[in-house]
Image 1 (tube, rainbow, N blue to C red):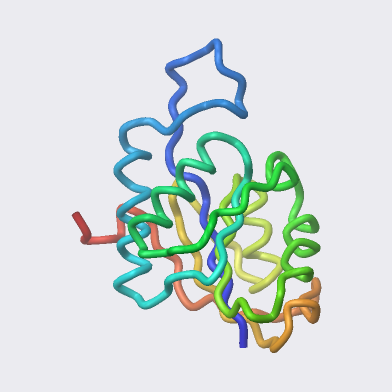
Image 2: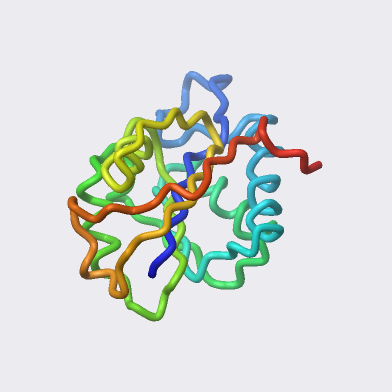
Length: 165
């Protein structure tokens, strides 16, 4: 059994019209919510073995803040392919994961995050910024992951549903 955590980046700022979409930073709420989600992961005992993130600034900063607050000690891998993409790219990336990783977190953007959850669980879920989904996958090896894998949606948390300061 493998565990997949799917995290939509935290709230970004629109205060800098000179920045491209790729370079938008987190706003105040995003800077507050990302560590809250990391702290929640730690409390749930769901510290990832590996974190993969979109290389867009708001996703990188979200991943970094979540990693630090969760107690994750590995490197956060930034992937250009996770920006402005489709669920298939996530499948291909996860299929290539070394099997030593039992719990992997991916950080990216909507609508792709919601589509990925739907493909893996058959459940259509709304994922606002900083939403985190916990999925159990009935596979022993990452290369067995495919479009027909029936994962179980264990939980979906949003910053508003947490009672963490």
